[in-house]
Amino acid sequence: MTDSRSDITLIRPGLLADGSGAPATRGQAVLVRDGRIIAVGPAAEITAGIPKETPVIDLGTDCLIPGLIDGHTHTSLAGDGRTYAEQFSDSDELMAIVGAMNLKKHLHAGITTIREHGARNRVGFVIREGVRRGYIEGPRMLVSGRPVTCTNGHFHFCNETADGVEEVRRSVRRLIHEGADYIKIMASGGGTAGTDPGLASYSTEELSAAAHEAHNFHRPIAAHCRATESIRRALQAGIDLIEHVEFLDPDGEMRLDPAIVEMMIDTDVYLSPTLQAWTRYPRIVRLREGREAGSLGAEQETELSALESRMEGRLTIVRRLVEAGLGERFVPGTDAGPNDIAFGHIDYELELLHMVGLSPAEALTAATKISAEAIGLSDEIGAIAPGKAADLVAVDGDPTRDIKAFGRVTAVFQGGVRVR
Image 1 (cartoon, helix red, strand yellow):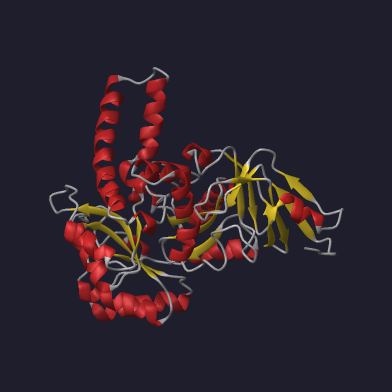
Image 2 (cartoon, one colour):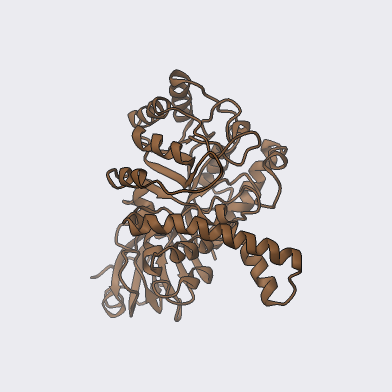
């Protein structure tokens, strides 16, 4: 190829993994112009057709991958260990500042696109606008606005309460006209005090009304589903993406329902297990580090043992979904923000997906190609290919073979501009 223009940049990594699931390859180069990839291929071929003065970014031995996508975040929450009540005692203005902090952490961890899954009032929209204008450094944002929930339901403090079919329709329309990129609905209880995560919050008819309205305006819809019955109803209602997929019964125990798994197989629904949040994996990591350092006390040893036991129960459920062939529908989501789930660690989520049966290469595909398809941006992101946005990440190692490589980010490019 030839190109006489000089407003281009050549990126030369040691390895390149394009997100398709193929092994990483050596000797590749990526040519970027005006924030987009214009060529990918063997370095000798790419460099032969460009001006000699073309700027070159040499990444040494590092591997270049597509920018990672986090399908589930709450950017206005700090992930600092405070309860929901404590975090939501902050003002909307302070929550927007928290959002700016969180977005930078995520971007520097290689996450170049996120879904903002629910914030109070108009905070989510404000943060997105700050990114759009360049006031805030952060990933590309898709925003749901306020999550639709029942009276005193999970996240009711975000102020989009709806009961009954007509109120649900009205809420969806209101959010879309305010600028929601997609709709989020709380189909079961959750961590909000007074709600029961083992019980469904909405009827199939209410969920169907929400899905119909969202689809009527060409918006996808995601449902928070911890309860087994909420998963069943969401599938019947035509929800596009099911969050958490916990299979929690009213007695608080997790039990996989084979009939619901068959329903999943028969639909094209995407699934976001949000494993690090519901296993408290960041806490497990910290406790394990303490144990390795020999600084863990008896009380902490007991805590770690209990957390590991519950984690294995959760992983067993998701492992069976993988065995059923549903791993190719997984959308990694950190659920960062609530409790102690801090921003900047999609690597934890990918490690857990590896534990349940995804290969490192499949985990990369889940966080790029599959996630881009699930959120409706496959024409724009999710792969290293001509025409795509030049959202790129360099990591130390080969992430198609070493799952820990996702935690060793060395460079981040957003729209072709190096931000780390």
